[in-house]
Image (tube, rainbow, N blue to C red; front, side, top):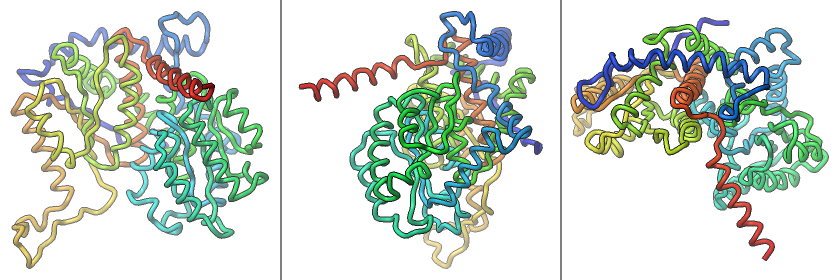
Length: 475
């Protein structure tokens, strides 16, 4: 395992005399946080492993995500070909040989992590590159996450008119992700896209072009049996959808794209190690929870802005929006998540953040290095824009000034901020960030006395939507 450059967390911007918190408050919270950590890494995992005598208030107990990175890596090291990760990599390789486009069907946690992986770790215009430029990896599109007629029709038409010929450039495939298969958005999309794919490859060949990621039983599992799908993967028991990004749910799409899934899991495992062993002050999970929880409880800071300083992390922010909202938005509690992309959103939301209601903390996510060489502003004979004096400055220089300037402006107005520093927009860094934010969410839930698992509020809309549709059919 390669040495992981660690993610770091700094909260100095929240230690402000007015509208922020104090170091003394953080230290006073430490015993409760330590107890909550013990509950997460001992009590929860022991109860989860035994599956017995689980108190009602802890049900559901979807704690399986916690040790999953280490488990998957250990299995891969001991038996690469037959391990889950080995089979994922083999299936991804087969799909790359057969198709030039893959449609990932899923909603919520069944697609948001995969999309974040693509947008963070792949070239920003990946789908527009030639097959050679993509290293033979298929283009990837996401559907089944909205019942939007026009977008579904547009993707179907695109696939219909851009899939011709005998080679992989003329074929596309489906990865359908749903634990039960009963979520209407994904189920209806699968029926529609499957019918279109069958027209292209024929019923007998469908099993080679469809890969389900689902539960051991359920509607999708039964449908996969009927189709005869040759490769399929399980959504692990005891792992909720929004905590499943480091299972086959996220790993299979990532592997298809050529993303280094081993480095991703190693990053997550490294974050587990920090969480379990490091004290407050050098523990990103505990420090993040301490600051954000205290701001909420002591200062009424009910909006948590994840301010990402690269467009590549926007989808990671959306993934976190779901994670935080569904996990802690219960019992009339829970902060409101909001993702901003800077410097873009400094020209839209920043006015409200700077001078609006004092109900926000800015949790910055900052890249310490960029994938590409720094791009200078450049010198020009047309200096009407008066930028020649900045000609040697690069876009990373401008971004660094924007970050520092924004934090100074917030500090001057006593607006709390924190900084999460990612070493790079790469797999090990994203693995750390994913695991950190999943652990912070569970830890804060235990600190608040809220079960961070399950989403009963989401189930209500599903129930009524299905009732209304079937009433319409019956009448």
